[in-house]
Image (cartoon, rainbow, N blue to C red; front, side, top):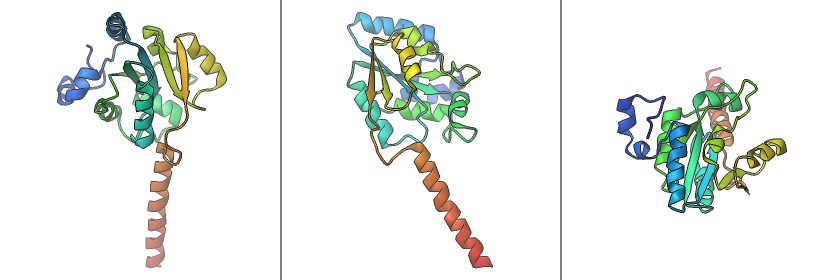
Amino acid sequence: MALCQVCSVDDFYRFSDLQHKMVSDYKTLGAVVEGLRLLQNKIVVTIGTWDLLHIGHVRYLRKAKEKGDILVVGIDTDETARKYKGDLRPIVPFEERCEMLSYQSCVDIITPVHDINSRGEWQYALIKAIDPDFFVAVEDSYPKKQIEDIKKYCKQIVVLPRQAERTSTSRMIQQAVKKHLDKVYELIEKRK
């Protein structure tokens, strides 16, 4: 398997689970998946940023894994995440997000997602490379046109509801900032 392109070789081997799960090259990934299919495995793919991994993410990954035998998780690179979520994201760097996901027993393969065009649109290289049996998405995460495009490259799309109604990375960030701003304002008022 190919090494993570953004990690040094020394960093890569520090991450014991990551070294067994990370496939950074889609050609290699295609060959791995082809071998797994020969063994009668159903391939499930999902992608995301996975920033500030939380209970909704983990529940979602477990539900995605239930759809097949092998769960391939695409992880937005830092550059990709900035295009989707703005200049202040991701909070957690790519290498650490990869390592956190590698510790999830339901995740079998991790691969970077970095094929974003100049308009910030995903170009589907991951699913084109492996033709998954299932592509799993969260409701409202893709516009209808994009769902139609995704259907061209996988056998079936599964749309799951959000797995934690009150928990999201954006909400966690907003609550933390608000809490700290409130404290800063209190301190300013005390000094007046």
